Amino acid sequence: MTDDIVASVVRQWQAVNPGLDTGPMEIIGRINRCAALLQQAEDAPLRAAGLTRAEFDLLGAVRRTDRELTPGELARETFSSGAAVTKRLRVLKDRALVERRGDDRDRRVAHVRLTDEGRALVDRLLPEQLAYERSVLAGLDRPGRDELASRLSELLVQLEGRLGGARR
Amino acid sequence: MTDDIVASVVRQWQAVNPGLDTGPMEIIGRINRCAALLQQAEDAPLRAAGLTRAEFDLLGAVRRTDRELTPGELARETFSSGAAVTKRLRVLKDRALVERRGDDRDRRVAHVRLTDEGRALVDRLLPEQLAYERSVLAGLDRPGRDELASRLSELLVQLEGRLGGARR
DNA sequence: GTCAAATATTTTACAGGTGTAATACCTGTT
DNA sequence: AACAGGTATTACACCTGTAAAATATTTGAC
Image (cartoon, rainbow over all chains, first blue to last red; front, side, top):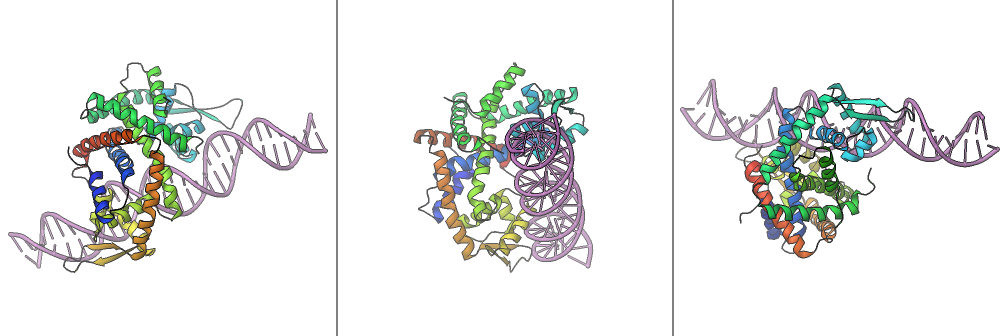
């Protein structure tokens, strides 16, 4: 059993402040660290396609819901601010990956859908992304992966209940 | 067993693209989502102290190693760019939380240490942070937490081996 | 019914943080 | 002395969120 970075950080804290209950770091520190490493790595395939992770998330949200979404819905779906969505939509529209349509009844709202190219791009990129992720996870055996997924789900439910309910 | 957001996203993908192997999302999607929620939440206590998470990480790195660090070491330790560290140090120095000292032998390098106020701030904030984190994790029972920490450690070792070795 | 106020949706303006690349500076080597 | 390499900073461009503004709808009083 080899050490990860968090284990050594915890050791440092214990050496300097022996009374400290560093228990939470063992989970939360590792989650943050994993997320940071994954982000660096996963950005690579997307960068090859000239896309930000945030832009890909937006395209994916439209693709998977399989209907037009408003900018507001996209903001909620991708957990970003409305302003960020506006800017991303502009970029993606200039690249002809999404189209906009004004609502007929309520002229405040817009409806966003993928162009054929946008859809094709998502459908090409997502399997690449998942294949990469599978290769990363291959170091864990099947029951280990299931266990991890299940524990993370429990934690995520807690976090959503506490923080994620009525957001933004 | 209640559903989390990732489970519903996976369901959406399956409905739209039944052949897709969405397995990796169950782990990686959840890690990213947990990290995002934790970041939003953890920023709160720090914001009360007028600190960014990144600034707090920097202070913590100096505190836990218990010696002076150079800007380069701080960049490696906190996984950010040298430029970001430079700017943070300027801010923290203006707030009298860190001090700089030039190396005598090699005048390229600087040594950074905490001021008394900086050290006191970290020592006050970190227990608050950990207490908050403990309350979030309280929804999981003890063996569940241990299991989660252990699985995350395995994954982190994999990720570090693959990506984290010689970085930046 | 009509108009004003409240509400809703999106965009724009602005400020702040980050990374990449270029620059400045320093050391040690040949 | 020139040069190769290391360390830190600066310059620049980009992305993000908050807050204010623009536009449109709904509500409620009269």
